[in-house]
Image 1 (cartoon, rainbow, N blue to C red):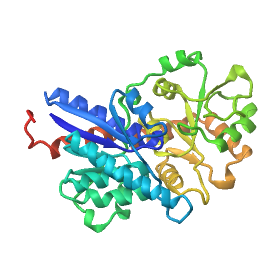
Image 2: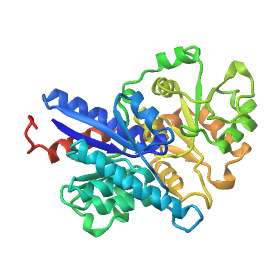
Image 3: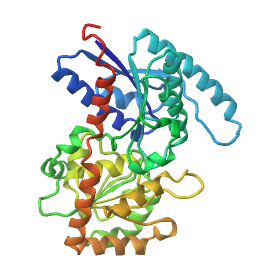
Image 4: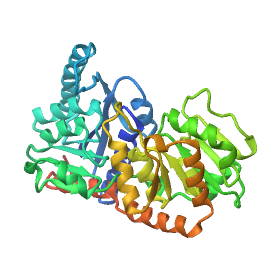
Length: 375
């Protein structure tokens, strides 16, 4: 019996890709008659537990502290939370007899990765974004220990990695849950109560919504609904939701139905977090992206957006370009240009066709193939 620990969290973007890889790992083990138990180590606070347990995995919570590139009054208590997380994760990994730890990133993943390395447990780490974040940069050090591997979504990410990682890196793309690859539009339209001839613009700001995108939609709604029924995941924004009800469908959160809703969409408007863009690519959707910019971000969304833009899968509104007039113009032009949408959809499909979950699952099994199935 293999015992595989997964870690990561803080946002859905750090959890759902890990769940995709975990599900594929379980499927391949079952096909080969290999016993495999997967459990998750995540933050004891926040959304991590509810998402993971809803997917049917065991969840163990540990204290989590943020990693900052600057000093603040929160740095000292965060240091002690990180330290407590390390010891808690070490106890869990030892007690649960983990054979390998797979990290999907986020600040909560660093203590478990450090704990696994201290126990001699191989560490696999995956970076979803174009360039590695701080947590991944730290986790790479543990993945360079014996048996470890580094996974990334983009070929270009290799240039950001240390020279010592050569031979340990797998360009896997991003893991996408199987529900997205097999989703069909009919169930999405049934969930939304929208007829088969209605054109759908799906607006996504991530699992928690995005205030800037919500504002843009409010300002542009009368124009957008000339072409589309606008289906909008708003998050908990109390100001979102106003508009012509017959062609506007706001939802604070779209859960299990998201793959089908995405399949039904003609066009997707959203941020450029890895989850949104790769799930859209898995369903060959053309994208209009409004990346998070400015001093409050490390620029990962801008990098992701530029990659999709260069590939021809997305049109991007950067910074001050993200205004009502520009948004209406871009979406209107796409709505009236079938050939442009078709070419963007084909470019999107090419990005999303790489089976990230399968590549990761196979690498885990290959790493542990020498272990007896009776273990």
